[in-house]
Length: 183
Picture 1: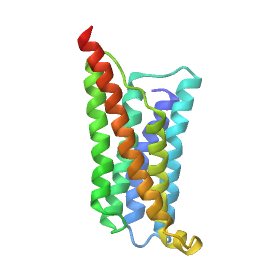
Picture 2: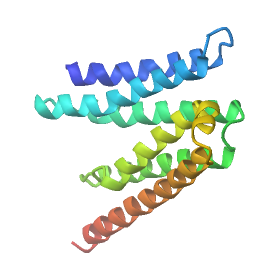
Picture 3: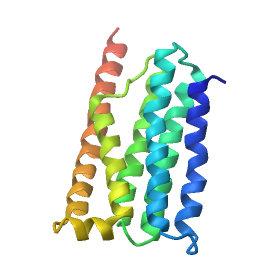
Picture 4: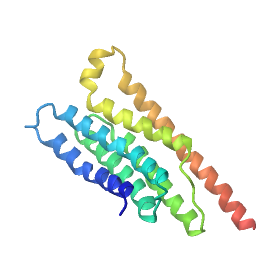
C-alpha cells in the first residue's frame, strides 16, 4: 500500500462524503460544499498518477483502483444530479454506459494479455465530466454570473467527448484484436 494507492483510496472515501453533504438539507450551502469535495476528489485523480509515476510505484492494485475510484465518483455524482432533478437520466445513462462498455472492452483486451491505455480523448472526456458536474452543482450562481446557458453547452460537449472517446477505444481495441487474431 504505497502513497499513490492511499491517495486513490481517499478518492473512494470522498464518494460517500460527497453524497452525504449533498443530501443533508441542514448543510449550509450544501451544493457548493459538495462541489468543493468533488473538486478535491477529482484533483486526487491526477495526484495519484503523478505520485505513482514519479516514484516508480505503479502497482496492479493502483491500476485496478484508479479507474474504479474515477467511475465511482462520477457515477455517484451523476446519479445524485439525476435525483436532484439537475440532470436528465438519458445523459447519465450515456456517460455511465460508456464507462461500463470501455471497462468491459479493457477486460477483454486484458484477457488477451494487452492493455488499452488511457487516450488523450479519454482524459479530455474526464475533464469535461468534472467541469459539467461542478457546473451543474453550482448552476444557480453560474447562470447568474454568465447570462448564457453555459451549463447546457458544457453538458452537450461532455456527451460529445464521452461518445467520441468511447468510439475511439473500440476502434483501437478492434484493430488490436483483429491483428491478434491474424497473428
